[in-house]
Length: 257
Length: 257
DNA sequence: CGCCTGGTTGAGAATCATCAACATCTGTGG
DNA sequence: CCACAGATGTTGATGATTCTCAACCAGGCG
Image 1 (cartoon, rainbow over the protein chains, first blue to last red):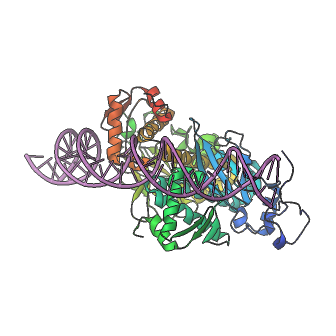
Image 2 (image 1 turned 90 degrees about the vertical axis):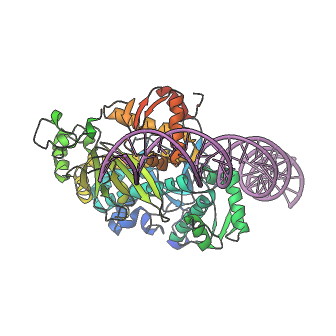
Image 3 (image 1 turned 180 degrees about the horizontal axis):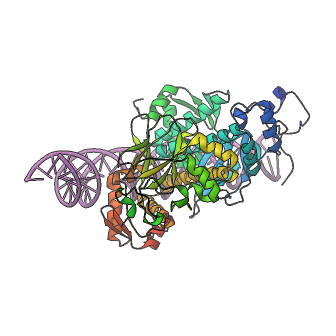
């Protein structure tokens, strides 16, 4: 483990607004994600309590693991900056990407059941991660009903989202799958007050294909086709959604274009 | 011979062993599923408390709904006898089967997040269902830490299983998907001390295909092929796993047969 | 008895995977 | 700062698995 080669030097106290996104000294009350992340349902005093159990470490470099499949489960994690890929390795050694996580989103909840992680997670780019020890979160939930409820809701949401994804993989064409992923990322950007039309994909085409159950080549072709149709601007990982209505039409299958 | 599919006439009080599987007067402490269902982590006094919040109604007939998509979310449900299909209807009106539920299994957890059900659930055959009001379960979990933990685990398990299913749909051939489903049902039967080799599928071929992202025709062909290869005995819905090792080999992709 | 739903089987078509060649980007070291 | 190598992405040609369309069969119920 090499020490900080990362741009996280300014550890001095500064106003929240001026902080670097990767600053790991931030706390929940001044984190700009606290309206979409775990603190969502809590009052200031409660956030204070939550804050005390959260562990923040130096930012992770691209490719570094947050946790690995089969490791003992200790904590769930919140993304504060950057992005994360969740994936698992099947019995016969193939990788399956199970999700992408952006700031304000929680990962690692699939490890609770068996007390060891059912999947691995690694940073797609330089990322700051909040570690939330699960036994402490459980204790805190005993005392703060709204926290328990909110965490139930977060897990439920993951279930509902996975089931939507099932539908996507089970019923939809390559075009629909790619369109749906782009719309999902766009919506999540919007939630974080970022551009819904213009963003950089942190993951590779391979990861996208893996996640969507397609080959790299197919993903690449879909991007090219969407660009040719004037629906998308594609410059490598830089994406512009030019015609979001058409993209929605494609995703819905009202595929007239 | 599945005793669970039998009609539910004798509602009189009888020793637990002699009870009809659909008897809805049973309580958690004498339910023979209490080692795999929600009470799993509780002592007798705690089960007593859990039991008091659970609502049992008359058995449902085949086709009756337990809850419907978009309805207000009030409760999660445990299957006590019979079997249940979970499904959702997409924007463009297609049905997607999201899961099958057998005795001892919990459904409805996808409704917690948004406070209304993200999917529908209906009985595949005559079934008894325990209704567990979620607000009361939440309160109880505040007082019984092991219940909170167990419920977190149940939700986590659902997440992990959905992610496995993602892999199945994303990477596997028709043969592998069907094999995996049969092995899953076999294992769940075994957990309930029923035959792992011999069982009746409660769902239609259409439902199987829908769940696995295949057409009815493909499912039918796979069943026929497996039968021809001597891996399976298929008599309509009555299934015999003749060569479970080969079936595992198929499911794993070490597909030499 | 015959209808209707559910299941099976067959032939042809389509989408996406595979294989292969080439292009572009990244980052590392000279 | 440039050059180069490996990784990543694009495009094309071919082929396989699965879908689609269609006919037929079986069983349950009025």
